[in-house]
Image 1 (cartoon, helix red, strand yellow):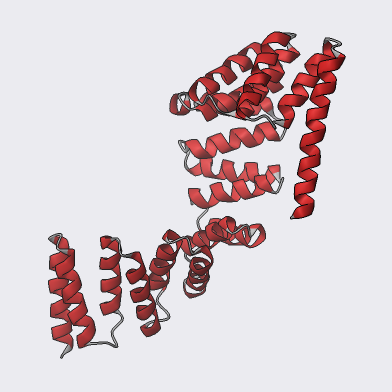
Image 2 (cartoon, rainbow, N blue to C red):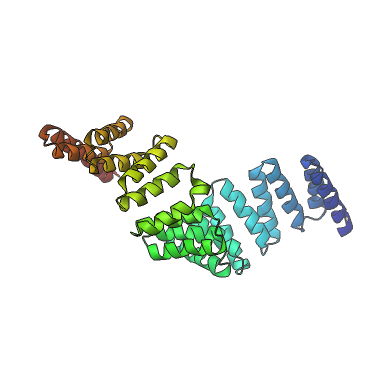
Length: 318
């Protein structure tokens, strides 16, 4: 069969795909593959059709076949990596992305995909290296800059994290995720006033989200604006009633304001959901100590001791 015949079959397959007939398209592509088995476009088109039909495993096998025929194709590596990712085979996907960066070293997408996969595998150092390269090639690449900032934050490098989030906003000032990340990082870096300014700028975009109220509450509490902070945490809990961190902060603030009964209610609400909440027992113990209630303070201390003992034993067993 000639190249013209191969081309005709591909065109017929393309027409069927455009008409929504994926089975018909696959049949034409299969004929094209049989006609010219040395041409990678046959299995590649079959793979793309299988992916559209939801047959991911067949698509993976066909992309692998196409790569055997054309190992230097970055497009095929990209497609195969994405499908492997969908199947939860992150390590195999990362290998494809690694090869993609070798084949197309000037493509920020390849470096980002590699860094993102390495991040999910817990490989922080190589992930940072890949994301740095992605952002060097494309400083306005928001997903790469955002993830780079998250990694720096996890590694307790606040200045680098802040710089990454600010780089996103320099190019994309309406990026709510980047601004939220920046606000949280500023708060962690001991800059609550700057953090609060960023949260206020997000009110229109995120004022109905629990995470916005929570972050704003943290910044307000650090500024000793307790009444506003309490209102923020209460609003966060109205939106996400089971958010333990928000209730912990609310209980602590009420205790700081001398509202011991209200604080105790919040701590007991936490224990209703988790009897082994160490910090809830700690809070109750502190309240009891403030009231000179030695029996309750001792009971809370015993609960904390038991929790810590169990945690140590579990660690030793592992």
